[in-house]
Amino acid sequence: MQRIKLLSLTASTGSIPNLELALDRIGIALSAQEEVPMLEAAARAGRRDMCEWLLKRVRGKTAMSGAMAAAKAGQQSALEGLLENGLQWKPCIVRAAATGGHRGLMDWLLLRHSDGPLRLEDCRAAFDQAEYERLLEAAAEGLDLPTLQLMYDKWRMAWDEQHQAATAAAAAAAAQVRRRERQPQAPTRVYSFSDDDWEQEGEQEDVGPLMQLLRHERETAHALQIIVYHMYGLPDKLLPAAARSLTPDWREKLEWLEELHEARTHKGPDVAAAAAIGPDAVARLAWLRQRAYTVDHLAAEEAARTGNAAALAYLIDEGQAAQEQGQRAVWHAAVLGRLGAIKVLAARGWPASPTYVAAVAAERGHTHIVAWAVDAVLCAGGDAAAGSRWLLDAAARAGSVELMERLWQHGCRGSERAYAAAAEGGCEEALEWVAAHGIAAPAPEPPAAGPAAAPGGTGLPG
Image (cartoon, rainbow, N blue to C red; front, side):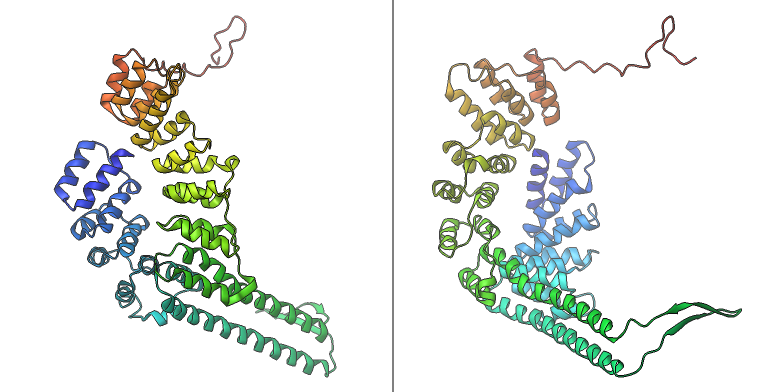
């Protein structure tokens, strides 16, 4: 994890020689998936030459995330370099630009559509339904209300046309059945023609005009149900996107979406969870609570995941998140290295055990979280350090000799896993420290036993 972070940081500087040197020093070949973060970092920083160089190493679907990172960051030059060097144009790149709020870059991308230049107004006809709805979600997050309304109107017009077509088809089918109802019906025979002869397949009775009418009505009702579901369900999908939007008119977007379908508006916890990630999350969450949105532990988990300590403290202090549901919030904070969130959770008695937090954080290379856990244990005094043997394993995995030394001085001797943890962490200095302090490598497991020997035999097949 630390290795990928360092390589990504080097890629973001744009220095190809430095990145080549860093890759050579690693001494092992990276998978395409491991190289994607480097491409994303270079794309976000707008390093066009670096992006083109990395594109030769990262191909296929994994390379698309680099283009999306450039589009979301508004880096047109880097994006142009990727597209000019073989990366295929995809609607998801336009969606990323919309999420980032870059309307001008969206227009630039649409002019380069593989089937010919497009305008934003043309996207509904050019994109498939699912892709256009995802684009609408991105617009709700990154673009202003007038642009969102323009795009939504195009979407609504298309569904209105389908609604009218389905209704007209139902009326035509009913009229046809009524005409047939007035005519005498006779049994019909079904024949199939072959090269040799006419072969009678069987005889079947006509289902009758009434049954045909019922069948058409059922099919039409099903089609209309699908149309209504999309027409009324999409605004519910747009609400979370608008709630996390960084545009100044985020409130207006939410109010407009609420007005679209009034009482049908879904005010579930996903909206508050989306609002819990921004710098003004506390104000947004309070506003949502006033409008009767559900605010619960999902918002706390999202605040912990994104490291929004202020929002997390607000949710716990206001009783919107129960301690019993806090394990996932602790895990998210530890996995992603959100120290501020860890401190908030620990201070309020949530299940943020230093040993557990350190073990989870060490696997991801978050040494600062392991350091906090060590401090928390040492501050407890007494035999706390000696009893936290797994903490030294976490420090070994994180590759922090300083933390290992501090724990050792306070009586923490680690476990038999310390050697393996240091090896898995990839830090040679930590491995040497473990060996120097008498923590031996675990003995290899004995080979699996063979078949049991029969009395007087060898156990080998005869």
